[in-house]
Amino acid sequence: MHSRLNRFPGGLVVVGDALASVNPIYGQGLTLAALAANSLGAHLRSNPDLRKPAWDYFRLVEAVVDGAWQLSTAADLAQPHVTGPYPRGYRVQKWVADRLTEASVLDSAVNTQYMQVVNMQLPPKALTDPRFLARATRVLLSR
Image (cartoon, rainbow, N blue to C red):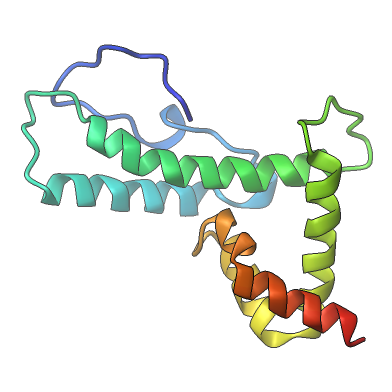
C-alpha cells in the first residue's frame, strides 16, 4: 500500500474498504479491519497532534495491508486459470511455499507458524525466519 499522496488533511484517517479491499474469497476482510483498527488505536495512544496528517497511522497500517495483499495475491496467482503476468521470482516463491505447505502437514510446529501467517496473526515474513525454514527443511528431508 504505497500512497502517492503528498498532502493529507489533519484529523482524518482512512479505514475499511476505503483503505484496502481484498479478494473476499479468502475471508481476510474482518481480520484486516480489526488489525487496521488496532493500528489506529496504537496511533491514537501515541497522543498525536490531530491537526496534522496521520502519517504514523498510515505507516502502521501499511504493514497490515501489505501482509494481506501478499497472502491474497499469492493465492490468486496460484489458481490454475491465472496465466500471468507473474511477478519476478514468482516461480521460486511458489515452489518454496508449496514445500512449506507440505512441511506444515507433517510437523505441528511448522503448522502452527504457517497457520499463524495464513490467519494473519503473523506477517508473511515469518515464513522466512531461518529457524522456521531450517525446521521445515529437516521435516521434508526426514520423510
